[in-house]
Length: 135
Image 1 (cartoon, rainbow, N blue to C red):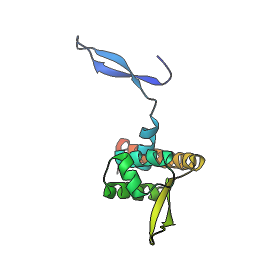
Image 2: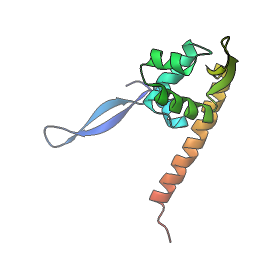
Image 3: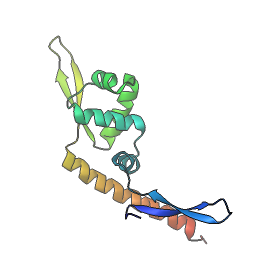
Image 4: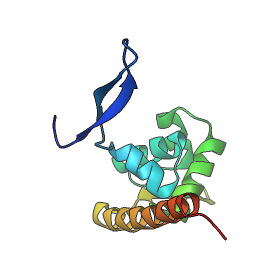
Protein backbone atom coordinates (compact mmCIF):
# COMPACT_ATOMS: atom_id res chain seq x y z
CA UNK A 1 0.00 0.00 0.00
CA UNK A 2 1.36 3.46 -0.88
CA UNK A 3 1.92 6.22 1.67
CA UNK A 4 -1.06 8.08 0.17
CA UNK A 5 -3.64 5.43 1.07
CA UNK A 6 -5.19 4.15 4.26
CA UNK A 7 -7.13 1.02 5.00
CA UNK A 8 -10.83 1.47 5.46
CA UNK A 9 -13.05 -1.18 7.09
CA UNK A 10 -15.81 -2.61 4.93
CA UNK A 11 -18.17 -5.46 5.73
CA UNK A 12 -17.24 -8.57 3.74
CA UNK A 13 -19.49 -11.26 2.34
CA UNK A 14 -18.72 -13.56 5.25
CA UNK A 15 -19.89 -10.92 7.73
CA UNK A 16 -16.30 -10.19 8.74
CA UNK A 17 -14.71 -6.82 8.08
CA UNK A 18 -12.47 -6.51 5.03
CA UNK A 19 -9.89 -3.75 4.62
CA UNK A 20 -9.79 -1.75 1.38
CA UNK A 21 -7.36 0.96 0.34
CA UNK A 22 -8.79 4.47 0.15
CA UNK A 23 -6.84 7.37 -1.37
CA UNK A 24 -6.13 10.23 1.03
CA UNK A 25 -4.28 12.40 -1.46
CA UNK A 26 -6.46 15.48 -1.81
CA UNK A 27 -7.02 17.04 -5.20
CA UNK A 28 -6.16 20.74 -5.49
CA UNK A 29 -9.83 21.68 -5.90
CA UNK A 30 -10.74 19.70 -2.79
CA UNK A 31 -8.15 21.62 -0.78
CA UNK A 32 -9.30 24.98 -2.17
CA UNK A 33 -12.92 24.09 -1.51
CA UNK A 34 -12.30 23.12 2.12
CA UNK A 35 -9.78 25.83 2.99
CA UNK A 36 -11.76 28.69 1.45
CA UNK A 37 -15.31 27.31 1.61
CA UNK A 38 -15.72 27.47 -2.18
CA UNK A 39 -18.36 25.80 -4.30
CA UNK A 40 -18.15 24.27 -7.76
CA UNK A 41 -19.02 27.50 -9.56
CA UNK A 42 -16.43 29.41 -7.54
CA UNK A 43 -13.72 26.93 -8.51
CA UNK A 44 -14.72 27.01 -12.18
CA UNK A 45 -14.56 30.83 -12.21
CA UNK A 46 -11.20 30.79 -10.42
CA UNK A 47 -9.71 28.34 -12.94
CA UNK A 48 -11.05 30.42 -15.83
CA UNK A 49 -9.33 33.49 -14.39
CA UNK A 50 -6.03 31.67 -14.06
CA UNK A 51 -6.19 31.08 -17.82
CA UNK A 52 -7.65 34.51 -18.71
CA UNK A 53 -6.29 37.38 -16.64
CA UNK A 54 -8.24 40.66 -16.83
CA UNK A 55 -11.51 38.98 -17.82
CA UNK A 56 -14.90 40.64 -17.48
CA UNK A 57 -17.95 39.05 -15.90
CA UNK A 58 -19.47 38.63 -19.36
CA UNK A 59 -16.33 36.86 -20.69
CA UNK A 60 -16.20 34.58 -17.65
CA UNK A 61 -19.88 33.69 -17.99
CA UNK A 62 -19.30 32.63 -21.60
CA UNK A 63 -16.20 30.59 -20.79
CA UNK A 64 -17.57 28.89 -17.68
CA UNK A 65 -21.06 28.40 -19.05
CA UNK A 66 -23.03 29.89 -16.17
CA UNK A 67 -25.08 33.07 -16.03
CA UNK A 68 -23.50 36.39 -15.07
CA UNK A 69 -25.32 36.65 -11.74
CA UNK A 70 -23.72 33.37 -10.60
CA UNK A 71 -20.34 34.52 -11.92
CA UNK A 72 -20.74 37.75 -9.93
CA UNK A 73 -21.57 35.80 -6.76
CA UNK A 74 -18.52 33.58 -7.27
CA UNK A 75 -16.31 36.60 -7.93
CA UNK A 76 -17.58 38.17 -4.72
CA UNK A 77 -16.68 35.07 -2.70
CA UNK A 78 -13.27 34.83 -4.40
CA UNK A 79 -12.59 38.53 -3.72
CA UNK A 80 -13.61 38.14 -0.06
CA UNK A 81 -10.95 35.43 0.21
CA UNK A 82 -8.34 37.54 -1.66
CA UNK A 83 -8.09 34.97 -4.46
CA UNK A 84 -9.25 37.48 -7.08
CA UNK A 85 -8.59 41.18 -7.63
CA UNK A 86 -10.88 43.61 -9.40
CA UNK A 87 -9.87 46.69 -11.32
CA UNK A 88 -11.90 49.28 -13.22
CA UNK A 89 -11.34 49.60 -16.96
CA UNK A 90 -12.57 52.67 -18.88
CA UNK A 91 -14.41 51.91 -22.09
CA UNK A 92 -13.69 53.83 -25.31
CA UNK A 93 -17.38 54.46 -25.88
CA UNK A 94 -17.68 55.89 -22.37
CA UNK A 95 -18.39 54.33 -19.02
CA UNK A 96 -16.43 51.56 -17.40
CA UNK A 97 -16.42 47.87 -16.63
CA UNK A 98 -14.61 45.76 -14.10
CA UNK A 99 -11.97 43.22 -14.99
CA UNK A 100 -10.87 40.44 -12.69
CA UNK A 101 -7.51 38.73 -12.22
CA UNK A 102 -6.61 35.73 -10.10
CA UNK A 103 -4.14 36.33 -7.27
CA UNK A 104 -0.50 35.53 -8.08
CA UNK A 105 0.34 31.88 -7.44
CA UNK A 106 2.82 32.50 -4.60
CA UNK A 107 0.39 34.78 -2.78
CA UNK A 108 -2.42 32.26 -3.29
CA UNK A 109 -0.22 29.49 -1.84
CA UNK A 110 0.37 31.56 1.28
CA UNK A 111 -3.36 32.27 1.58
CA UNK A 112 -4.00 28.56 1.15
CA UNK A 113 -1.55 27.69 3.93
CA UNK A 114 -3.26 30.20 6.22
CA UNK A 115 -6.69 28.90 5.21
CA UNK A 116 -5.70 25.30 5.87
CA UNK A 117 -4.25 26.21 9.26
CA UNK A 118 -7.48 28.00 10.21
CA UNK A 119 -9.59 25.08 8.95
CA UNK A 120 -7.47 22.57 10.90
CA UNK A 121 -7.85 24.64 14.06
CA UNK A 122 -11.64 24.79 13.60
CA UNK A 123 -11.71 21.02 12.95
CA UNK A 124 -9.72 20.34 16.13
CA UNK A 125 -12.09 22.57 18.13
CA UNK A 126 -15.10 20.71 16.74
CA UNK A 127 -13.55 17.33 17.56
CA UNK A 128 -12.71 18.45 21.08
CA UNK A 129 -16.28 19.65 21.59
CA UNK A 130 -17.62 16.26 20.46
CA UNK A 131 -15.04 14.01 22.13
CA UNK A 132 -14.57 15.85 25.44
CA UNK A 133 -17.69 15.68 27.60
CA UNK A 134 -18.98 19.03 28.82
CA UNK A 135 -19.79 19.97 32.43
